[in-house]
Image 1 (cartoon, rainbow, N blue to C red):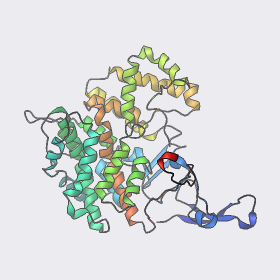
Image 2 (image 1 turned 135 degrees about the vertical axis):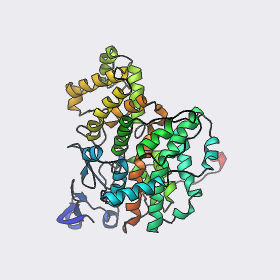
Image 3 (image 1 turned 90 degrees about the horizontal axis):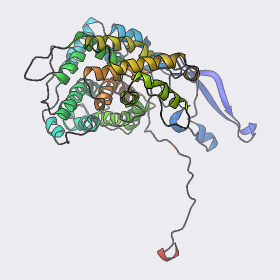
Image 4 (image 1 turned 135 degrees about the horizontal axis):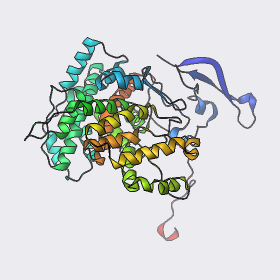
Length: 436
């Protein structure tokens, strides 16, 4: 599937010289705005476009995820995110992202069995983990652990072999929960818990996180269901910073494990994957419902650095569709854990009420996003804030490998090489030290 060339073109007139105007085709996708194909801009004009943050630039064609931020739409392969989260398992969504379709019964069983068979990691990875200080941030461990997989699995490094690409993709989806749980266990001095093939994907992760050898741990169906939804909601989100990082690293023909390691590094940033941790820290800072008016006042003060975390989104200019899905799960989890009187939830609910009704926030479309609720759920489950981004990476791996596969198979893909607008010194001669 490729973009359609329309009958329309865009003309660039420079310095009023219409006779030598540059002309570019306009392409249209299945949905979303048309795009101006400027690949020939430098050839035609000797100039580049300048677009810091890629605010108005399409970097690739993709069939995986569609977002309409104005309407609050998020779809994977045409399926609405709310429909997927309500009716599918995370592994069904992984299959959808990788292969373009939801699996039928036979395909579902085969895919789940295949993933389950790859959830264990090489035993020597324990040595790598034990080389880190106990106080290491889990993301630091995950970056190293995931990138190091290329040293253990030599039979899935050929990026131009479709079977090896598929094997690498399945391995990463399967092993990320194990590696993430190991990072948590190591940080608290507990023994690692091996995967249990009798449990589904979400339940298996919770078991590896919270089971201990000295007593049996029973996974709560409510918590497992919520974890499954959270993984689906974070599975892919179009060309965000970490996905673009994976694609850029992949364009150099790096091995798949190194590319996903690069994506994890990008996700680690507080402006990207660390947002739900920032929500919990903000709720701790507010402390009590009675303090909310003071912090609302501060949020409105442009000279005050304080910002309400978990509100607004770079893409969504409407209600984040993922937030609407997970809001009910938040209540279910807190009720299951006997934490409905959680003071953080009381603060969060009051903040949400204010944000949805206060003209200041409504005008600026600062609606609650998925990070607003996910952090509360994770903390209620007993997951430390330092691991929140690790859970994000565990889920987003599904999207990363799908995007990686799509890019490698794209005949138009080239090594990424952004241009720049140079504003430094002009040409200079090197003088001897006594004349500088």
